[in-house]
Image (cartoon, rainbow, N blue to C red; front, side, top):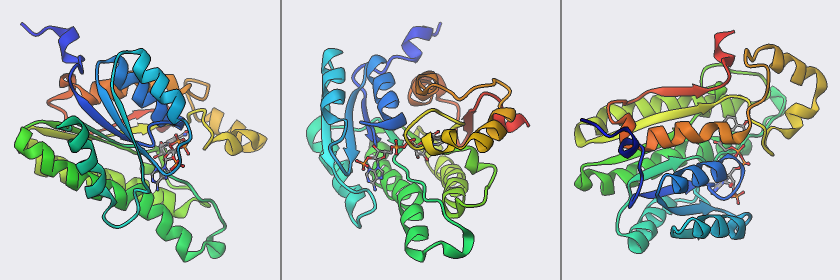
Length: 256
Ligand code: NDP
């Protein structure tokens, strides 16, 4: 008989979380640590590192930080190698780091388009690819790519963001198909409207905020902690027969 608690247990698992020391990533880090994992965290700045270190160590787990821009050529191999050198294995990759740039259609700079696609899509591909090199010989692994409601809908002003988040689903399905026979599951967690730094300007826009709330059956923006259960589910043995799926955590937003 299957022990349900064991299905969600991440003891002795190593998780790499891009952008795992701030924003939603910090909540993913907390959730994975609370479920038993040690963590490796990547970001460009050191913002949030000390708070995150204190949190992880207070739970008796190990944390390694790497200051690295994931869009730099060769970064993915460097990041995965570093994680392996420190921890000896990699069980879970959470491709969370992402950016959003808003502009009018004709004012969108080519460089901004490329920056968003490089961060939100290309870097996820390179990291998943390098993670697969490690996970295939282990015959196990979980890759969780972070999507968005913009993986399904597309709005003006955030042209490359919507394109990149649609791309995350395509990348995930292709990699899920390629890696399922190797015992590796690749899935998308697609957060809805979550209360973070990234979404503060949107919440401050009174009419846009009212429009958004009218489309959320749950009637409120989510607290980031409301994503913790889903990330643990997708990172754990509880989701071993789920491949190439997208789980929206959106208070029902996509229903309307
Ligand atoms: P934040 O801006 O709060 O955090 C982004 C994190 O990614 C930071 O830790 C940042 O650290 C890191 N990061 C960004 N660019 C890079 C880079 N090039 N290299 C390394 N690290 C990088 O964003 P959120 O927490 O709000 O969003 C996280 C993810 O969730 C994104 O993929 C976003 O699209 C998605 N999402 C968010 C929603 C929301 O409501 N907030 C809704 C739906 C999806 P640093 O700046 O130090 O590099």
